[in-house]
Image 1 (cartoon, helix red, strand yellow):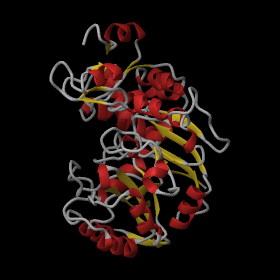
Image 2 (cartoon, one colour):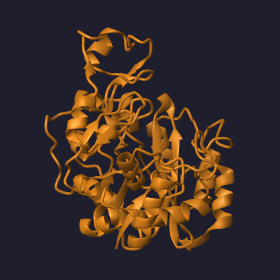
Image 3 (cartoon, helix red, strand yellow):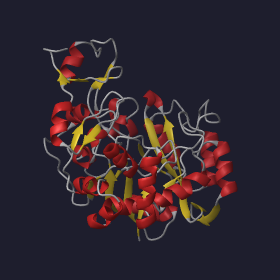
Length: 395
């Protein structure tokens, strides 16, 4: 069976997460998105585990269900050197035992626990309990594995189970790195709120024998990811090297010459695009035979927001979004499969925007330094607005 799965989210117990990130909110919103499987996030937090256990029914083999939405236990751990690791866990009993064993001072106060264990130590710890582990948003400059290591094996000592690409990278970028040719790639949302423009903004289409932890493990181990869906990486807020204060895009060589300081006084952060170029083995991606398609998309509400120039949560945007969902059931169905002429019957402005996305016919003002990129469906407008990369002449 083919299912849409998003394995990396956070609960209300994580820093900077919405207080509404609760199981009873995540379940219905995930269904409207078009997901069939969602990670719980924060599965080492004792109070969150108690809530999951109290509010869901256990379907067996690691799956917890509420309102026909299936959850598998997942957690993001911040390890040594501030590197983030994503772990998929067989059941609540194992999550509780691992939580007790993890040396961490904040695991009862933050859904993303911090530990001084390195990647190799974490891998050995969780593998003893049949968990799956891999680097979260592997290339991001603050907490990605490749910001500290040139090789995934330097971090983990041996081969982890997967690589999560993160919002600022995609398959075409990652497959320029030769050592990743044997890894399945996961694309997950890292959502901190239950809005459908956050949940499932990146997701995986995965082949499962049934919805169970055993099937998830088999699929990842046998690289049965059938498609990855995610943002155009230029839209990611760490895609380009940029200032974290004024968000100017800055040539990496110039940034280094100026000791990663911007002329405005802010700190310059190396972008995912440049970091991958540093470790890449090829100028063009070399996709292994098992590598599935990577399909670029954008959350529907953000698409509507861009077209109408109104906030994502405004009545205008949410009203149009709701009309589309009422007619076509899920957001993923609208974005990928509903015929354009049928979408036009609901909104004549949204239909050509979705068609442009499907045809890869959009322009992007790249993101960097912590600011998301922007899209434009008007090429003339985009040419006048496009941000320049700062060079020696205008630094």
